[in-house]
Image 1 (tube, rainbow, N blue to C red):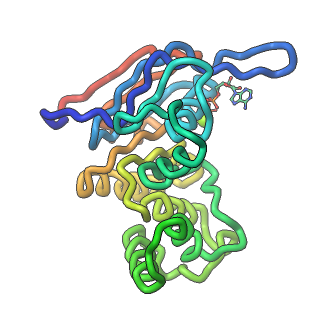
Image 2 (image 1 turned 180 degrees about the horizontal axis):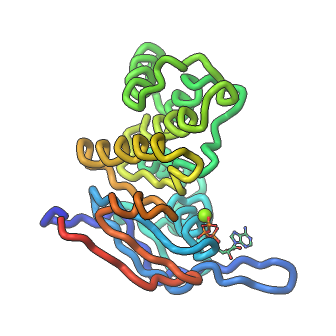
Length: 234
Ligand SMILES: Nc1ncnc2c1ncn2[C@@H]1O[C@H](COP(=O)(O)OP(=O)(O)OP(=O)(O)O)[C@@H](O)[C@H]1O
Ligand SMILES: [Mg+2]
């Protein structure tokens, strides 16, 4: 852990309620969490404990019922929908558990997609997309659509798509859950390498003890609350 710890994500007193029918379910209760620049942080906990909910709130995909979340010192709640979309696009890369690649686009086009909202000319876009496809080891499959790729290849494309804009924060919801051990290991090593080389902050959820083993810090959730925060020696 660096000495000058710069907070990139601040979750303060956050709760999230889901209403279904006449009942409400408290998916997160009074969560306080600060994530520092360059961390490689795992969210652990049983199914239903609130891991995805917390990642979705940090990723501005959903909004808290109460409490506040800041990214780089900016409070999410103060933003207009357009400002929020800009903040997401420029600062956060999200790797979904089910990859969420656009099925009609090729691997190349999926990775290129987040760049289209920025003013990057075609030649530079092309160069950049190819560089990231190479980085995650799927450059050979650039022209293939998601249904012509294996799970591990799709996951790599999803990671390249999350990285392409150079976000400071990558959020990944069970990035290895759908992969065999070997592919999972190589995805994890890739994430760790990017974390070390580019100082990108990673927050990911996992059930997998091998994945937790690689984390710099583990936050354990249970029934929507943090029960344990385990920081390893650097
Ligand atoms: N859209 C929703 N509407 C109602 N309840 C929801 C919704 N999304 C999640 N929940 C509930 O919130 C709780 C937390 O769910 P969440 O998806 O965050 O768990 P998780 O820790 O990611 O679980 P898993 O390990 O199975 O992915 C669960 O009880 C779940 O049923
Ligand atoms: Mg989940």
